[in-house]
Image 1 (cartoon, rainbow, N blue to C red):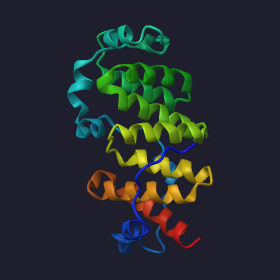
Image 2: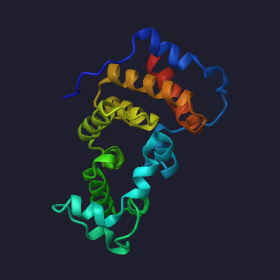
Image 3: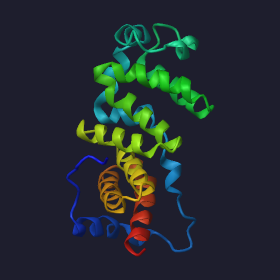
Length: 204
């Protein structure tokens, strides 16, 4: 069940895709929205204000704070490895197809309160990749309630809602993703992809 969220009004949705859509060339290859259902870089989290937490926490601390979690996926890391290295290893495992290993490491990050959003986001991308869209939407809403400002959270939420035939909510999430991405040049590709989705949904 989709949690109630305060989404933009219809006028805001239209405004989101009208802003900047004039530079989308009709003959340009379309950006697949699914290409952005992936973990973001360490730099993105640092820009989101979590740089110090990533640097100060290490694997030993994460294992202590999550004694019930299986830390076997961390075997290739030293206990002094920073949380940033743990995140990078989780992303590497995910890219290599070891979703269970990646999930273990993301859960370790989630258990450390300052890094909760990073762990939840990792689990969100895994759920979306596994097409567990109910779980993905629940995790996305958890991040939104935690005031996570990473545009990709809203992009994945919109995509998940769309797969669940919740078109109204998909439009709202996409509009929020576009609004956040417009403020940061690093997310220009996501902005363009979301604008295309909004255009298609608006005229479907």
